[in-house]
Image 1 (cartoon, rainbow, N blue to C red):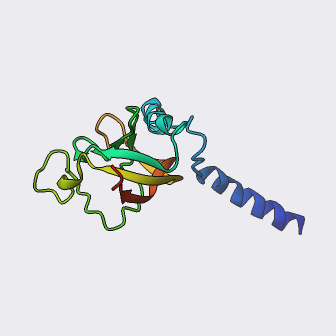
Image 2: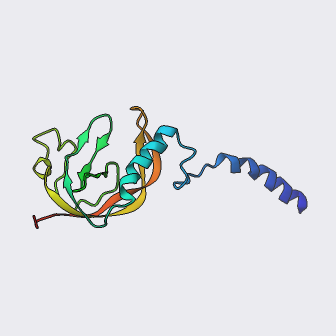
Image 3: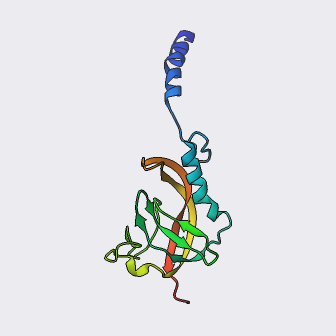
Length: 148
């Protein structure tokens, strides 16, 4: 019986080294550029109100996607590459650049949005489009702010 257990243990041990799990709370194994990108996305949210009232700056698809909103204090919150709940608002991919995009009429409008952290990913580095899992803020709910 001991021989069977030892054989099973020795057979399965190499497989343990082949399994890689991604700890999305510890980004030290990621390239430095990816770590910086994650920190830059998370930083504005450290003191962010929830819900928040923000102005939509217009999405853009350049080397990477951008889906930015700006608060009255100048803080910019980018929700690109997230599983955002946008309701029935017609946001587009290039609202900031293309007048024909569906969400162009939303640029400059104010919104009340509620956000939460969720497992997502970043796209990085230097145009390589590599993806790295990360816990990032996403839009949980968004509504056009009609009070102003």
